[in-house]
Length: 382
Ligand SMILES: NC(=O)c1ccc[n+]([C@@H]2O[C@H](COP(=O)([O-])OP(=O)(O)OC[C@H]3O[C@@H](n4cnc5c(N)ncnc54)[C@H](O)[C@@H]3O)[C@@H](O)[C@H]2O)c1
Image (cartoon, rainbow, N blue to C red; front, side):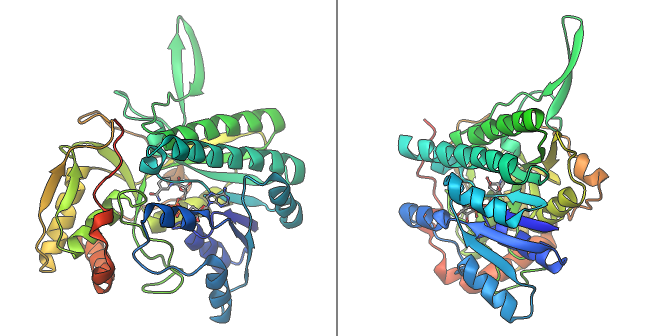
């Protein structure tokens, strides 16, 4: 396949580019580099120094990997994007290229507007560009489980069969997102669904849970091919953050009582899911949704797991409850469905204490670089 990876400089984008390269697909990796600017602005840098994706591509080739072509392009620049699509004519487009942080989107009016402008305009440009240049391509777009919120019923995969006043229909599952970032994903989903119906495009929306993990089979451990690993309160995700706090023997900071539940997924499973979606594309005109997570944990359960694993390595770990900076239900029902990707072949890697130990061991040599001041949440929803 000819695969176009959008957002290839990021945590998930680069490992995904390598996965397709290893499989023998032709890969074009695109990024604008904007995330590095946002990191500087908010003072939150990844734990491991991360080479620019063009340098990573050069070193990958020098080490004997298949060439990964790179291009610097902003999805919000329609003429530039359309030119890339016309030239590359992809079979599959994997779209990671968005502002990915809820707290970032809640910091100020400027950052809320930036988040929605960047994410919505980028995806809208992409849909129009596909229509013009490659209408046969399959779009695989990263959404989030946070689009659904925490309704008091089971969460289906994108759609729900409902009966209303004696009539039945299959409609998009209700969205109750919890930040302007999550709202940008909801708006993207509506634009994608409409573009598929109106123009016959094929799209898969992957409503992804919270990702954890450092390395993948393709990047290998401690390598210059690693993606951008964040642990701060803005771009970091829960398990990654707890592991870094444990490695620094700093208290694991739990928001509220920690009873809020979320779906989680190993970074290696993310790559499997994306590859599965690409090898089993949506049909022309089809907009489909998969929920992309493998396990549900409460935040307190995750903290306990990390504390236990850290204890086995001789690290002294405590927990600290912070007033929840977010507006979210403290206790709630949570039973989301995630059958579609498993039906197509996903075999989940479950989160074990041994896996957490491998993360702690990978972080340990970098403990002196951990900036604990970036971990406490500075952004409050109210
Ligand atoms: N990491 C997670 O836990 C998680 C969970 C759910 C959903 N997601 C989604 O998955 C995707 C990838 O997440 P990530 O953690 O790799 O994020 P990331 O920030 O590490 O990577 C995103 C990349 O996209 C680039 N980008 C952003 N806007 C762009 C634009 N307009 N044009 C070109 N490039 C642009 C950035 O420079 C960055 O390198 C995001 O859409 C995110 O919302 C991530």
